[in-house]
Amino acid sequence: MHDNIADLALMARLLWKIIPSDDALAQHLSTALDIPVLFGHLLQQRGIASAEAAKTFFKPSLEALHDPFLMKDMDIAVERLDRALKQGERILIYGDYDVDGTTSVAFMYAFLSRYYRNLDYYLPDRDKEGYGVSLEGVEYARANGISLMLSVDCGIKSHAAIAQAKAYGIDFIVCDHHQPEGGLPDALANVDPLRPDCPYPFKGLSGCGIAFKLAQALTIRNQTPVEELLDLLDLVAVSTACDIVPITGENRIITHFGLQKINHSPRIGLWALIQQMNRPGPIKVSDLVFGIGPMINSAGRLGDARDAVRLLLSADRNSAQEKARQLASRNRERRIVDQQAATEAREMVEASGEVTDRHSIVLYKPEWHKGIIGITASRISEQYFRPTVILTLSNDRAVGSARSAGGFDLYKALLACEDLFYSFGGHAQAAGMQMPPENVPIFRERFEQIVREHLQETILQEELELNAALRLEDINGNLMHHLRRFEPFGPGNRSPVFYARGLVDTGRSRALQDNHVRLSLRQQDGTKTMNGIAFGLADRFEALKAGVFDIAFSIREEIWQGQRTMSIQVKDIIPAGSC
Image (cartoon, rainbow, N blue to C red; front, side, top):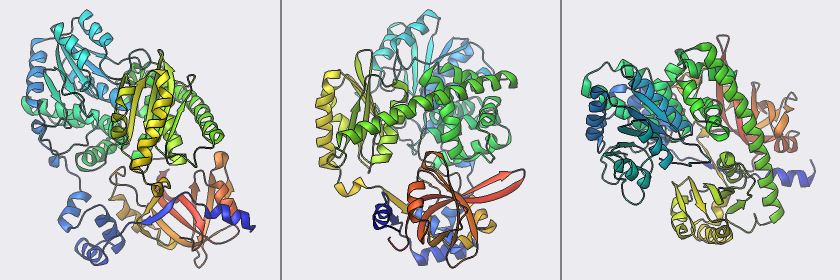
């Protein structure tokens, strides 16, 4: 191997970090639960230190869901909604145009329409109206005889629009999960666990999760069968997975039962989207995030978000399949636009030569499509591991989407720049803003200064957290049986990442498109061969395959024609013994 190739391979972007765990506690959990010691380590790495807590973790129960009336204003919201239903008032469900918003609207409409017909729903146009409750939406409500508006996945920041609704005599219930700004809007009820005075014990629900809690409260009030509500958990699971909220607490319970429904009896709209994915089951959180979610999102990104709601509410298989094909086609179109923007963004970064000198990336190109700048920001942030803001021009405003890196708090940084914006919002990991185009250069320098002050240079290299060492020989059916008990995986409960030492190529590995590689590996001192995939690592593998190397990987399991197969997904490849 040439020295320059070896040097290239050594320059791994990821810093391997083994998550600490206590051997004695792992052994105690292993004995108490009759599980291999490896899984005692995995439990305590998730903060589970007792056999009782582990039993609760391994067996999610709907009975463990919190009382929805613990949420501030829930009693007011339920009383007003119940009164509207009993008096035959016209109700408008107002939602956002992304996956969380469209599933929230579909959930609430499906739930209420089972026994009530005087309903309508409204989703804003991403380009013309933007995020949140719009004045156009309020005017639509007034023109259509609406007396009660119910927002889902938005509204907590929509002060002006909600004030206008009140002026028109329209009552407003906000169901949101975002951070309030400038106090609470003048709504009849503001149901949001993130409002400062809300005592609700779990703060991580998605927007559709909040809609679920409102529906749960209504069933409790009216003593209706809980089965009516549980039948809709597939929508809540899609929302929870795609909004990247923690898969812990109530979200873990909701996602567990929602995935059961998706895998056994999905609603027709989700069934049609699963057909478009064309992949073996069972459907997991990652399939929702990377398969179902982008197709639903494509409706609002490059078209009308109501198309997604219509599909999710579809009752006819033929029409659902046609709608799903349209969304899949639109998603392919979105990918082309997205890849073009990401390529242009990378070229801008490389041409500037600033990535080695700066702690942040701020890029502005007026021609970029507003619907994909969030995806572009994610791609650039992941590639260069720096807080990233991607901006385009829309309605004479510079509109941006931001993504964090290294634990940097985006929201606090943007708060320090708010004098430059028309508006902004979001949270620590993702945010958005609008500003005069002439403010972009000022923002770029101020943002860089803030990031430089608060983000250590040592954090600008991404860490890869590893759970434990694992030999390929040990990957078998018994290990997978125990690993499945840790599902569903997601933020807060990540799929374990293992590492294996001393691997060699069997000679059957092959490069794929887009720098991916199909792998066939064994350990130098072993006989078992494992097949797998490594995304974006073909160059690294090519530089190392002639020798011995170490890998970081997760385990994948699929069922095809009734047969379970196991493979590995390699996260990183490094020269043997270099870490």
